[in-house]
Length: 138
Image (tube, rainbow, N blue to C red; front, side, top):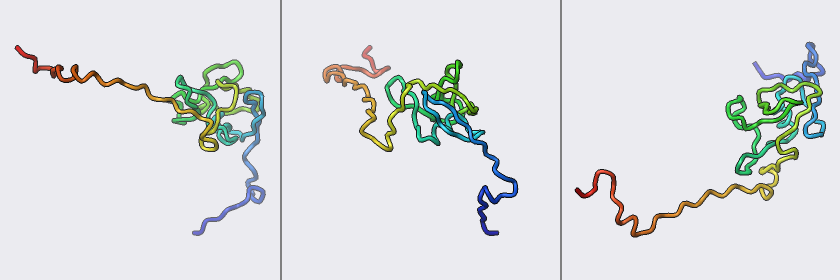
């Protein structure tokens, strides 16, 4: 059997997707009924919409509601997991940054990666005099 593509306009069942519009940080964003808020944001090209404690961009990580990286405010409801909440026509979504987070794939210069903390090596004399547990002199 060969694969066959039927255009939506030619399908006898008819078009099943219903367009919807949500507002994200004051800007209209179009989506399709059944998409999650994260799906609408991703389809609109927004890969991240908040920042973690380190300043790193956050968006969808797990996509199943476990990691809480995709939190947004929907209407008056805070800390909604965007990957779990289906978008509804007219939803007003506020991201935690209130502005688009730069996309590192399109412009890597706009994203600064957090620097790991440096751990100082103990002084040489401390290492030489240190004893392993159980090897102390008696």
